[in-house]
Image (cartoon, rainbow, N blue to C red; front, side, top):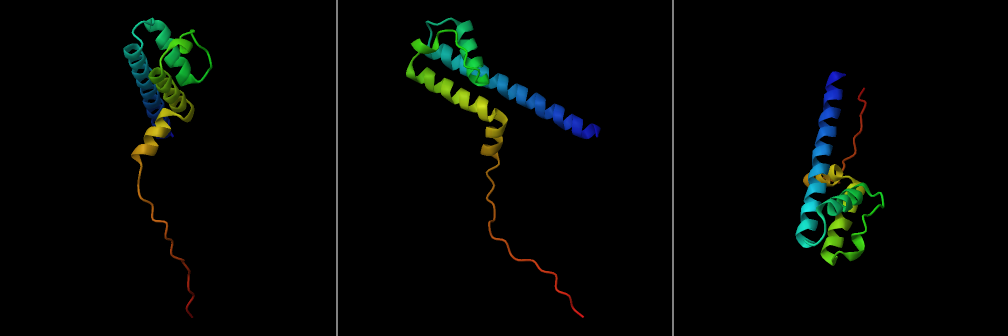
Length: 108
């Protein structure tokens, strides 16, 4: 029981760290591509995009195409889930789609 709780705590902490890294990375990219905008407004845009809440600080209309693409990717990762996307990319195991029939044969 306690082992399951620890696994859930680890997963929640991992999700928190990945989410924070994604928001900060998005903010840094926006800061580089839009140097004339205030940092706090770009952080707000990145957080709003990740959370897909639809709020804006009024910066979205005046940013460039690259910044909009970055926000779109952030919205997608926030909606699907950053951990889900990372696990989907990492766990690219080739599945054997061939299944052989199994039968229990009674003898005697």
